[in-house]
Amino acid sequence: MAPRIHHVQQHHLPLPGLEAMSLLTEQHFSRHAHEQFGLGIFIRGAQRSWSHLGQVDASAGQIIMVNPGEMHDGVPLNGPRSWQMLYLDPQLVVDEFQGAVKSEDILLRPVVDDPPLRLLMQRLFAEITARTGDETALEEGLLLCLLRATGCHRLVRTAPARYSPTIALAKEYLDDAPEEKTSLDMLAALCGMSRFQLIRGFARETGITPHAYLVQSRVRLARRLLSAGHSPADAAQMAGFADQSHLTRAFQKQFGTTPGSYHSVR
Image (cartoon, rainbow, N blue to C red; front, side, top):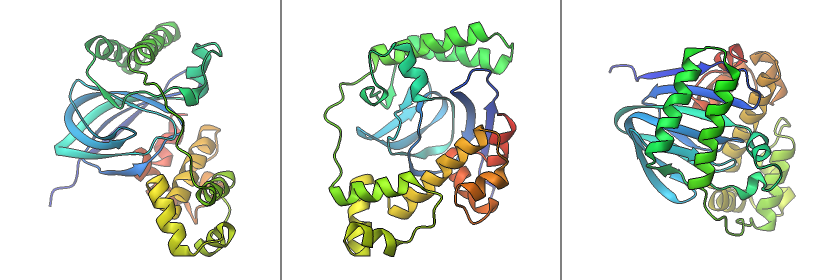
């Protein structure tokens, strides 16, 4: 069997709170969430993914967008697909609204056909990959993309989904200290329910199991630690992973790249 295609290039950017990457891959991304806004352009192929609007398909030329905390996945359709992606810290987006809106009030459509935004994204990634070091051109290109995306493809957010008190308590516990050792017995006792009830209720309300949620929380913590300059080995230990190899597998599954590669461009 021929090896699966999987190529990821991370782009070094001089602007804080901003990450960029280019991907060509057949990898199936299981359901997960990011802490940042995601804004990308599909270059080749197609994929099917979950979003806050349900299942959506994206193909070459379309714009894909992800909101912080939004559960999504990605399955290739008919072979490898390629896209270029920006990840923006929520505060970076909010700052451009000068306090007029909160990040949790911004809800972007998952997939859109927008030729003007496509052209802006193509120009921005041309600037990114050219590595000219022109921060002004990079900032201006980013802002033009952001203005178009939020101005034309922002949805009215209805009242946020409320978790049941027990599941909200479990999420809060896992979010507060993902690096701590946690068991299903401990979590179920905290919530006053059986392990079966916990797993079933958590998956129904969040889309993933408690253990999957914990691993993703640890991966996100590790990403922050890597961004702060910690080595992959130290980040693995500080984020609660048994060792660096466990972090590497989980990190690549969620972000498509390794902790070492991510750390090297920081």
